[in-house]
Length: 260
Image (cartoon, rainbow, N blue to C red; front, side):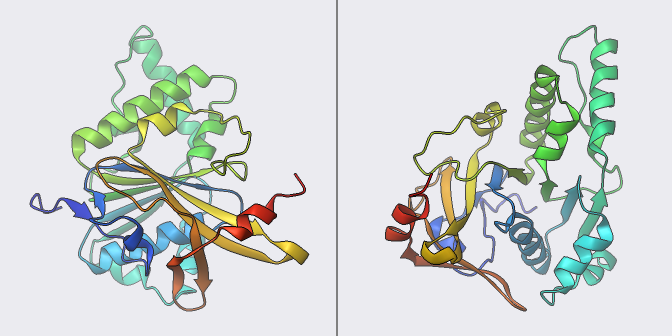
């Protein structure tokens, strides 16, 4: 990453208008939403656009295999193989249970002190990314089931590693819907929200008569004067995600959850 650069632009049509200058380089950003809200597509599109601009992207999958991720990208006419050959893209699948076991072993060796070195747990030694995408934190958390304190330790160390390395990261998290629409909701692992520099919320909205639409919001971005509004978003064939920053979903949101 060019050290003279200070902000990262997603290149997703309409989305960057919600951010002004962009995302400060080195930030850790949560991309959260319910099932089918478009989180993975958003991040794959972001990875594609970053590679087009010569950035090196590591996509760390804890759910889908590399082949499936490539098929998703190809479905929108993106070319992951080209970027892989250029050394710009690394799609790699990891097992969350391996992280949990590694953390347990390291904590034992460190006599329960917080002396964990994140690098050997996750990062490929032969690839130095500008951007890291983690898909998803929910899968990692599941591997620490019943050991929430271990998960917290791991996440604190992981965020510190990203900060030291000045790597811009996007971390996908599946959450109950809606999370931030002013309704009662108890978030598990809420420490992650405090550690993150930014939060992007994606919503799958049920309107009257069963019609479903998509929306997006920038909930938080440290150091940036964000546009605080929930706006329309569409997943367009052969293009990917398109955001409509002037289409605010006000009345729709009032009727969406009237039955809950």
